[in-house]
Image (cartoon, rainbow, N blue to C red):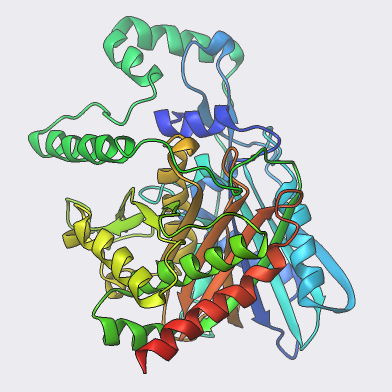
Length: 469
């Protein structure tokens, strides 16, 4: 089946470069079952879910001379064993070795001649654990009609649901001549639409009053965001190399709830305040000048209710919209409570604050929503100039109960957010089963000290907990 990439998908596809590949990644740590999780079992699990995410069996074909946006076409040579691979750490594999492996895998661009995703089954971890790392191109996941693969392979019970036989017959791939003729035909029959489609714009063609109203709100949000001006100067913003460092941290969700209750704010506010405190101490550890007015601007996309009611009839349902949110983290403020108060005020002042998606709405959806929500947040951030903010922070809610992959317990889950142009740090935060999991991706050269961030995050949280007593 042939369909044209949306304007935003095409932009993600074309703007990619070797230093900042446009992928979204996730790392899952699982308890190795007694019989093990075999590579063949993982292959079978993913194969059964592919009908829910048809884009994962399609590749991108460009149109000669750029006469139109590229198209999605079925990959007639689709080979799932190319996309799902095995890797092993030298036993006993430590967490640090796993993180080094993720950093190396995340540095590699995806093969643009094939469907734009990869999955790795990583064996050899200590404490009877295994890991699954997935990497998907941003053009592949829009959260509305296409979900991230990590969303659909996770189950709420240890016994996976039954799936019918998948009989997939790839459509015939069009020739270059057919793609050119199709593009010319669209120019003849819909010239205005073609001109609009070639522009990088948020104002997609609206066909009803409600759609026009939604477009108007999005334009207003963009205008407010751009009006903030360029981000303050920061060591977080310099040339990004091709190599990465990755590290993680985990906190008890109950600690964040305690601070939230004490200061009558949102958990997301507490997360941002903890990050602000950690960045403050990181800057001080580097001998950077920090004055009372010093700030670091974060893009922290917010999930909001869509205009239409959610369609719960299938896996392609619209789970939410995501709104851009620029917040100036007060890293110059030495008092952790004042930092939190300033961030909470910024959240309350945000125009979409009244329509934020309740975490309970998202976690009741089928599958495991965090991978898709992280992808949507990254799409929003990538749509803005990286000069407007210093770093990306995505924070999404997950299920607060035990989840499974192919009958195997999901212990921990981390986002691996990409680095944007001239941004050497990105943080993804996921709540799951009573914990908050921080995935920290950084440039290998510019942030050789990224391994200190987990301890700084814990110190920042302890400051707030101590003040809340």
